[in-house]
Structures are given as C-alpha cells and as structure tokens.
Image 1: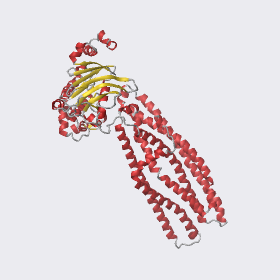
Image 2: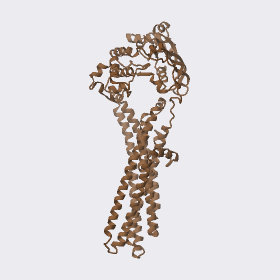
Image 3: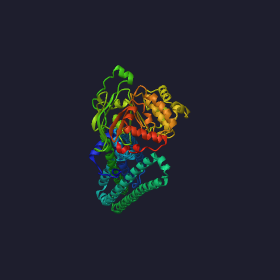
Image 4: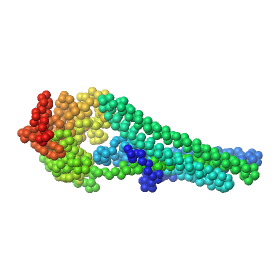
Length: 612
C-alpha cells in the first residue's frame, strides 16, 4: 500500500491534461460555472462600495431621498450573488458527479479486461480504493478546485484593484500583513500534506483488511480469531483516527490564525484610516468599505491554501488511477481475428460443431522460468471425454487457464480446429466452453439470474429444462420464491451441493461445445455426489468434456486419461490401459482404493513420489 501514501507533485501538467479530458464533454457547464463565478464575484465587490456611497452621499449628508432606492439596489445585488452562488455550486457539483461516474466506469471497464495475472499481484482492497476513495478525491478537485480557484483569484484581484483605486496608501497598510499570511499558509500546507498522506495510507489498509477478513469470516470464526482480528482492526482504525485528529489540529490552528491576521489588518485600517478620516483625507464611507474589503480579502487566501492540498492529493490519486488505466491488457483479441474452419457433417453431429483442441509443446510459468508446465502435448478430438489427474501442483488447473486464455503460453501453442487460440477472437474462444469449478461463484440476485447470467437468449423455459435435467429443480422449488428466490452474496444460503447443481444447470443452459470440469465433485458428500454424477452424464452427453479430478472413480469411464506429474505429461490412455501399465496412475488408484477401503497404503504406494 506504499503508493497510497505518496502525494508527489503539487501540480503535474501531464496528469492535469488527462484529467481535463474528462471535463471536456461538459465544457458548457464549465463555461456556465465561470460566468456565474464572475457574476457572483462582481456582486461581492459591489456590496462594500454601495455601503460607501450610502454613508458618504446619504447618511453623512443626512439625505433620505434616494437612500431607499440604493437599499433596493443593494438587495438586488445580494439576490444576484445568491443566485450566482447557487448556480455555480449546482453546476459544478453536477459536473463533478458526472465526471466521477465516467471515471469509475472507465476504471471498471478496464478492470474487466485485465488478465488474471494482474489480479494475482494486486489485492482487491487496493483496487477498491482506486474505484472509491481516489475517484472521490478527483471529484473534490473538479467541484471545489479547478474552476472555483478561478473565482478566488478573481475576487482577490478585484478587491486589490478596488482598494488601490479608493486609497492606495490605506491599501498598502492593509497589505502589510500579507507576509504573515504567506508564512501561516506555508506551515498549514506543508503539515496538512503530510497528515493527509498518512490518512490515505490508513484508508487503504482499512479497505484491504475489511475485504480480506469479511470474505474469510467463516475461517475467522472457526479458528476463534475474532479477538485477534478485532485487536488488529482496532490498531489500524485507531491510527487512522489519530491521523485525522492530527489534521484537525492543523485546521483548528490555521483558520483562527487567518482570522487573527484579518483582525490585525482591520485594526491597522482603523488606526491609519481613522486618522485620515479625522484629517479629512478619507471619507467615513471609504473607511467602512475598506474594512469590509479587507475581511473579504483573506477568505479566498485561506480557501486557496486548502485547495492547494486538494490539488496535490488529486494529483496523487490521478497518478494511481492512470497507472491502473495504463496497465496493458495482456490478453485481448487480435486486430484481425481468424475464423475457425467449418466442421464437417459427421463432426457436427458428434460434437455439435467441431472444436478439435490440441496442445503443442506447451511451456508455461507464472513467474520467470519457474515452469509449471513443461512441453505438454496432447489433443482432444470433438466429442471426446478426457480426464486429467495428477498430484496437487502438477499443473492440471493451469492447463484449463491456458485453454480459456486467462493466461497465454510462453512456448508452444494451443489450437482449436487448427487455429492458434491467440489468433481467434477472445469472445469466440471462451464462447466454446462452459467451466464448472469446485468453488462455485454465485452472484447476488435470483436463482434464474445465476443460471442465465444476463444472457437474454436463455428464456425461463430453457432455464427450467436445464435445472430439471441436472436434478436441480427439486431443491429450487423448495426454496422461497423458487426460480425467483433470492440468492445471497456468494450463495451463502445454499449448500455446496446445491451450488454445484446450479453451476451444472448454468453450463447446460449455455449449451457449450466443450465442457470443462475442475474438481467438480471433490467437496460434496457421497449421496450428493451420486446425484451430481448422474447430472454429469446428462451434462456431458454429445459434447466434448475435459474433467480434472482427484477422485479417480469420477473419470474411469473417460475415453482418455492424462496423467500429469511435476508439470509433465507422463502417461496417457484409458483407465484399463493405465492400470495395466502399472505406472503413476496405478499408484494413485491403489492409494485411493486402499484409503477408501480403510486399509493403510502399501509400501509401494507410499513410495509413489520417489519412484515417479
């Protein structure tokens, strides 16, 4: 989370140009806001001058005629200032919300395109900070920074011009306190900057901690880690609070200090200006107007000091956001994707439209040259059922990740119907498959929504047929609401077996050419496994199937079984052929058979790892 604590430059022209691109579609709103700022600033400048006129020309001269009209003009100016302030606030807040919406959509769109390798390196809590807190800071920049700082500058320049025009000597007396303002503003900006950096770092830690521990709450409760986790969160939250309290201290000192300097300027104006009034070199109305101008002069200065920190934090947030948006999309469709050759009639009838898969000398490593797969070559013919077995870490799931292009191979290639999958449209490749995992991911919504997954071509009748075929309908109809019943986040209210059956119904409803099963029955009880196994027969009928399994009983009737060991394809054949070969598969089968039979494994099976 170190980059969450870095603030960097106060202003970066490159980043500002990119940020202003999001402001460009709303340039009319910006122009309207600038106009209202100018109108409001002008109305603010006129008010003290009207008071000067009222005192000098009417009150001091004891003339009532015309004073009522001047009062109405003053009231009209107040109304104009109010309307301008309202219009400016409404316009910029609305524009900021639209920019925030556009920026969040751009980030989320890019997150959906990034490959899994990026998510392996970046925790979810950190990415959540990008989409939430960092975008909020950018919103602050647009709503109270980029445009409104122009209003502050306009007001400052206008007040200085008015004061110098009315009496340049008295204006210089009022400006004598400016060095104190500069010192206070520098002290405030420097300390608040450091405090803000610490606050942002602790916000990122809070997000990461909450995401990790709320997701793993069952493990926390199972191993009775509640007191330990509470203590850790208490420490993180306390440091976040202390950082905020420290920033409150600087604000508590800064604003009273500015007020004190403003009061000092007023005292100097009264001292010098009062003497000028007594010497008849300055009117009383001008003195009152000077006092009001001086009070209005220091307000934009304090606002600009705070907006400097908004600008600096926005530069840091935009740096992090654009670093995410600039993250290259490693896996995407080619500019001119190829098309797979049309399948012959006999192949179409056997497999629903081809889909001959071939791994050709495939090498892959997640990190450097720490190879997970080494020279893997095999093919899966249309309509064929292939099982993949091997010890944990042998590379079984990696094969599936490469086939679905979640990652790309470093050496060799994977082809479908003779075409390298990297030369095919990504949506076309993934559209061939349905993946059923051991850990089924369900989304918040309804049962039907989790089967359809937003595909409008899958109607309710097709959903019911799919659920009925995989034996999911009985438990669905028992749920409150049936197919319209609510599904909690991650399917928390459903059992493992029920979630698995829903994943089968989902796969069948999408009617894939190739079905991929990754440990689909390893987390269910024996009775549920029998139901699931029957559902699998329905699911695998008339389509290509690739099944990863630890339970060898689930793949014994496959057309071909591949045995992986330490990233290499060591054996291939049917169940009977591999048993007759008496190699790795035989040892795995012997281990599982003896374990299921309640007897200790034989010495030969215990030496599996060494011999293989």
